[in-house]
Image (cartoon, rainbow, N blue to C red; front, side, top):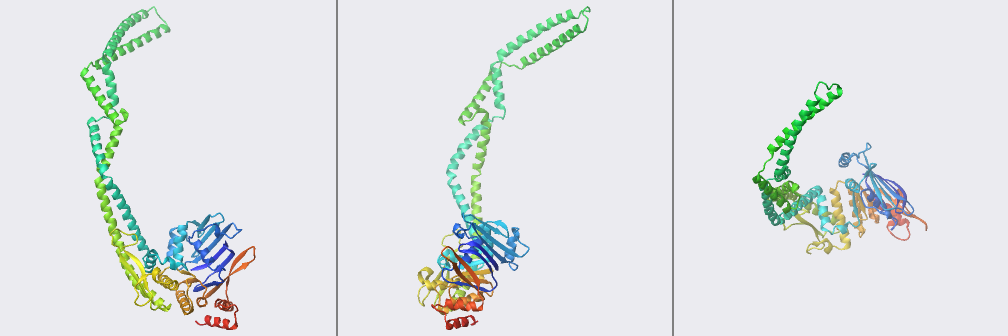
Length: 551
């Protein structure tokens, strides 16, 4: 439950510290005093959008903190623990700081948080029903959400929506793949021919370099043989000269280290020349004047060059291009398998949606009966006993998985006996719509799990004995959850276990809103004021005291 709210420099509030308790707390005040400011500030803590106008004029920032007691709220405790945001004090502290520049920061238990997280934990802590709720209830989406909340099927409805989105994604992908099949077939035929042509060529990774080297050698074979042969003859002649030179320096009369070095160099030169002559012999043995081989190599290279030009790549890139085309062909060849797999996945997704949607339908049908009974009973108490309220579930004609489920949900009503049922927007008047809205909100609140319920002037358009019933309904609800109610009706205000009065003070330069917890006699004065009249008399006070003591 909400234990405390602290507001600094928000709207016309300079500073406000408010402690709240169990039961029903009513908030009253003159028109324009700012009764809803506290609730608006609380809305910022639970994820509402902020702008620069939320900051009090002249201040740099607005700062709002809400403290919730969560010792009996296991869902909130679990949510915080999974995100490592839990505190040892069994509290949840939500804080929002909004700057005058339009920027804002959010915190959960002192840690920076996103608005999505604030809204998620806020949904577990607070349920707000505003005076404008009857407007949203005119929309089928809001009616469906209220029915799902009553059925305790909000998460199941989200599961159905996710299953539908998944199915739609697969269906779109399948349609796209199927549309590509004709173009893929033409591409497949072309790739098959190109890959087959390159397969026939069967060019090795380093074959091109070998072929070019072999062609060059075959083209120069005559020159190579002739020049190598001449080199052999010269080596032989040089060897004969070296023999004669060695004979000359090997005479015994040549002594000393110098001549010894000369003899060693000549011996080394002779050995190297002999080795060079041997290598030339082996080289010439390998050379071949083979016109047939030259023709084959040239034709092979011409095939390689032709295919390289055809694929617009350099000859040395042809093997890489071959690998690319083969990979693309394999992908296209797997196209039918992909289509089959997508079709199977689409069928599986549809079955998953059908399974979840059937569960949701069963819950909705059961909850619809409960909601009809609850709302009808409440409407009887609100002086609409002749009203016929129905929740109609209409099966979707299409088989396409719908995010909203297998049926449309619509609230229909007849305000006069014998009249045909119609939509809320067409049948109910403003005052009737306010009461129907209140009955629906009370019914939804009975099944909600949030420990704090806030009703912001939901009694607009209601008066007399009906207003007293509204107060009783909210008071009964406060036996189960904490109720905060902004009201302008004395009949509702007197049912509260706690009473806060909002007032506006200030001068021409600045205006401030203040909130005061009323004692017994102060409540009498406020209830008397709310009953109307320019002057509060003893009779008015007596009536107010009687209203407060009625319970």
